[in-house]
Length: 252
Ligand code: ADE
Image 1 (cartoon, rainbow, N blue to C red):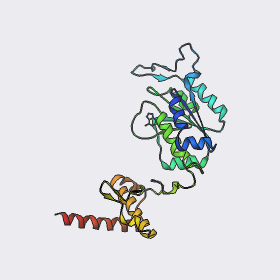
Image 2 (cartoon, protein in one colour):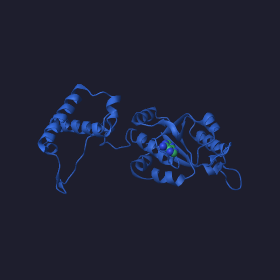
Image 3 (cartoon, protein in one colour):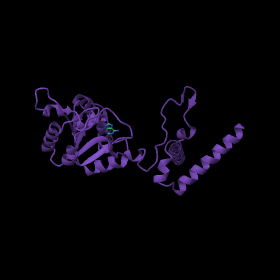
Image 4 (cartoon, protein in one colour):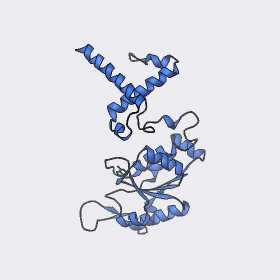
């Protein structure tokens, strides 16, 4: 699977392609990546890539010609690729999209805008999907493209190595992942929960279920609306509620 990023700052993306799990996966040829400078496709003396918006107003808009040429060039190298425009106006990306794209195994070309956006004709002529990584506006789409590449690539078989399993990830079952601990047993006066040292796999699994559920309840209660709690989850949450009640009773 090939990830191509069209950007005015190719060095930003190259650093990402060269490091960590992604860098290693590229070395092992499990995935490949290329970042292409949109400015290389400008033809005037000043290598202009932006211009003032028709109709007036502040800010600059990315010109369609260099961008169109850059996308065509990327498509020649990746003929079956899907073209994704990074924009806060796009569909909000989530773990399900990462799973779908990793499974489809289709090459991806990311178009990263800067300034106020790109000429609308580029959307209609070249773009297959528009994606956002959240309801906030950044100065460009590069960080968003890297977030999508990272979360998609790690789901491609072999990228994470044999030990890690993406099945336990947060969001996979509509819940947040449980808390994790490693050595030492005591850090700054705080002990690792006893049950994790017990070697009792059943009890550990039960503790992890509760940990993930209580985190979800406190940080992302909206996830319970998308995936209603199962019978077992309700039992764990009710038990937790009883514990909280007892705790509150003790402190008054
Ligand atoms: N470009 C600027 N902000 C963005 C966002 N939130 N998601 C995707 N691309 C962007």
